[in-house]
Length: 208
Ligand code: PMT
Image (cartoon, rainbow, N blue to C red; front, side, top):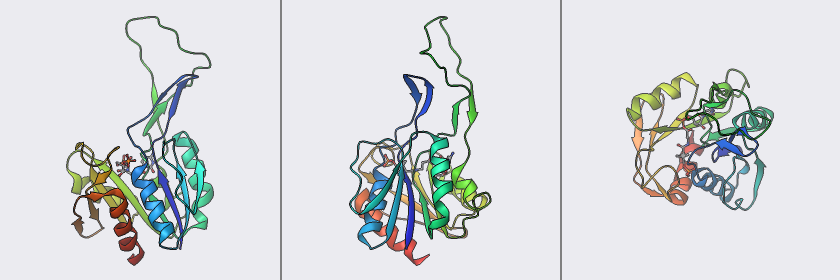
């Protein structure tokens, strides 16, 4: 199968030396890419900046910002049968990127942000993707309700939700515990290393 996977954080520039980002290490998405490649799939990994090595046998497209990730996914998704969105994409980006480094002035400073495009939410309606669509949900409360809402609203076959308020799983840890949320039911998998979990997840997704 031809599989597109997004991973890592995005970096939203404020001025030439500063940016907004998040705690995603890329480990979950890279583990999924490695597992999918080992199971014989042809994998394209579209990733924000991470410190990780590109998994063997995986095609790699680096991006920095949410808008670059949108463009990369929009240009590639039509060639794939399965898309898994594990990236932590910024929901907001600075309204204006300052051309020069911002100077210190007042005690307080306000940066105006604007919404980024929802890449997962555009996959079906805007990009016309008809393959299997798997999203992630990074939640701190009402996990199941929020994940099911995302699943239905964005036309996903599956949403994989994780509790990002815990420090032993989720962002930047080597383990994860996820709940699989389908349009009509859900199932929680035991906590495991992201590598083991990724193999299991790819097997489950293959069945979809
Ligand atoms: O990278 P690690 O350190 O290993 O951490 C893994 C992880 C916690 C980042 C990963 O397991 C995870 O939960 N990824 C999704 C993070 C996220 O941004 O979740 P969300 O609930 O805000 O977004 C929902 C879905 O929409 C996600 O599939 C996301 O990729 C996608 N999205 C979000 C915003 C946006 N503008 N475009 C998107 O496509």
